[in-house]
Length: 541
Image (cartoon, rainbow, N blue to C red):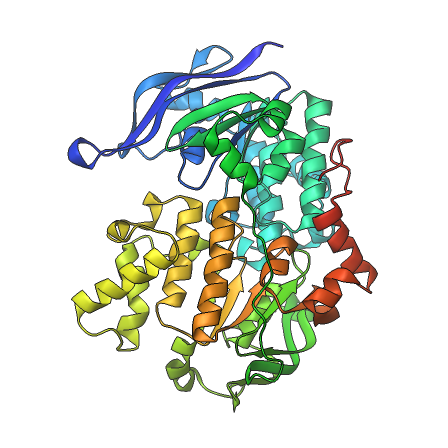
């Protein structure tokens, strides 16, 4: 095989002088034609910075390359002319970014954004581009969303946004696809579909893949070779089978051993109700025509009833677009809804926004997309401190700074980083900032919307243990939304399974995991635990 991408002695630094951060130090590896190479490591190890360097997408002049070379088909991309980089980006080399909502333009329709790369590189006409966009939607499993191509990104779920990003990247059938956490926001069944899609495309097009991920299960069944990164350096690389069966470095062994374990602490069955709802509905109107006539509704949440008791965790699982996030937002009155909602015994479904404000500190939410929910203009201190200021808590600025430091330390972040801004953190670190922002107010009920999806395995295990400890110490009630059933199993006392806005099955977690009754639940369990889904002929474990 001929050499497609070669990275030699790459260095990446942010800032200069005493404030310089050496994010990547002396990284060297290559990707051959038709080969799949995985770059793995914990959050903040330098994986994404390395990937962004390939297409010269790091912010200039904040980021610079003190040394090294990046050669694509023998051509050095460091210092290449902007016009030449534009010819390569999106055509010969494409990238799937980690956070889809922040990568998609909020003002442009899905069709316009997917078609743009076809207009720029292929000079397609409008009709031809539309046909190709529809073909790509089918390719990534979004054929049922073709009638909604004129919709904006925020009108889609996180998993659907991720699949749109994949469609954009595959539009011109690139020679090299850089996939930065391509399945982070996807449920287990769609994850298997996307991985098989990428395998099939590699075989059909001879496409090479540079896969950046923290999910070692994906690595094992997608990569020919693995490069293990930590602290900006590659500490081990080699064929995938050798790395998994005979890891030579202590850090590699640490990664392979890390995953959420155990079960939630026992909780009294008669504990007081923290949150419950009856026949909750959230219907979004479908409008068409010049006068925007309502022709139907998207029934995101359609008649759901649930209870969450103090000290308990209710896990909400289901495929992307099933209504999980909308349910969580509706319970917190962040989304308009019909039906009864009671919080700590008080009815809140009919309250005005200003009457709800005193209750907000007691019910918090950790959002799915950490970068989109953190203001880029505020430091981490200001972000985490904001709730304390709004509710008049924490005393003076020095006392609040101490509380923020304690919250950051609880979620595994160095308090000394609190004066940095969100863009200076990795995706996993930003997620931990979001968790700290919710925890600092000491709420009694928290909606956790995919709080571990952006975290590597070892940090997932730490966050699961942290959430267990906080629940035990503060008698917290959690609504835990996730597509990762292994994490749900480690945290949830009860589980609710959603599909197309409705509940198909719910009950105690042990019973549901041991004896799922509904075929849809059984399919989810098989994809998550048995992993029989065929990924290019390899059975996952």
